Image (spheres, rainbow, N blue to C red):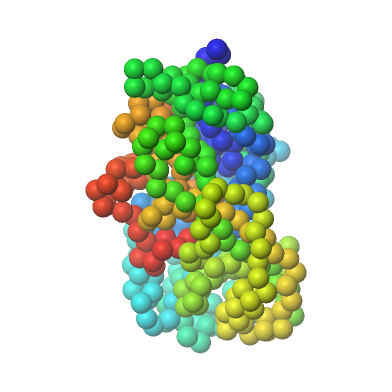
Amino acid sequence: MQSYDAIVIGAGVIGSSVAYHLARLGAAKVLVLDRLQIGSGTSTQSSGILRTHYSVIENVELAKHSWSVFNDFAGYLGDEEASAGLVKCGYLICAPDGPKLEPLRAALAGQERMGVEVRLLDQAAARELLPIAQFDDAALIGYEPEAGFADAYLVATGFARAARRQGVKIMEGVNVERLLMENGRVVGVETNQGRFHSQTVISTQNIWAGDIERWTGVPTPVKAERHAVLALEGPEAYSFKMPVFKDLGSPGMLYCRSYGGNQMLVSEGTVGETLAQPDNEQGDISMDYVVEVGGQVAERFPSFGEAGLASSWTGVYDVTPDWNPVLGRLPDVPGLVVGYGFSGHGFKLSPGVGLVLAQEALGLPTEVSLAPYAHERFRSGQLLTGRYGLGAVS
């Protein structure tokens, strides 16, 4: 049985980031196991939006650290060929008079207190940035210039390549079947390709995190939730120079960005379709749904009333009851560190989460406190529920 300093389960954008940071922090022997291939799970379905805007203030610090990495991805990895596919176009968010107004005001103020550059815009200034939209109902408009979008697959593979350069072993097509335990603590994993030993296992299993409950008996409050994404072709281009947009005034709290330099990528930031079992395959998108979302889009982008559907796909979130992740050790299972339940935030936070989970696994002080993200919050009731309600904006 081969022995390692740490074993990471999952080679998506979170697992690859954890592996890279373990090696960067000095772990000499790190093994990553993935049931499929690097970045081939839910990471490939990410819309790729990057922002530090959160109504849950604890997320802002993780997002700030992550943005600094995305902003100089090649430099951070020490690999001049690495690219995150970053498009730095800014992030625009607005709310009308109503229940979302004060939460938005508070979230923008929280960002400013955390040192994030945020600008308050009037309707005319917002139209200059996003001329294809109308803002007649916007009572408050915030703009985060240091934001945009990137490519989750490029980031996952970039972290994985940098990890390998530092000696990390990544095995694809290996399914972890159970944790190995001795005297109540983790001592390794059993897989379809044999046993591997380590006193430290980090699970980054995303929608498959329910395996943790099956292996340990510790309740794992996570469910797989499918969300639809549309690419619309309108008479006016949604160009790369135009900011990502979050519409708190629409029924679906829509988020939009440029796609392909001309089309609009759009999806809803609300609760999606709960799946009975983890399933990363593409789901069906009904024409009724396309029409309903298209109607919301046309309210904000009038010319898109004549838009056509260019393409569509589905992505699956690993959702917790408060739509925020569980990060850190499970006290009932010594030797196990977990990172699951990202609820649509995983890519945005992946560099920062990879660092803090690696620090936690190695017994080092963490860059950001993991206490708010502890599994125990579901027992104590101290949830991290966002002020916008349940949904991916948090």
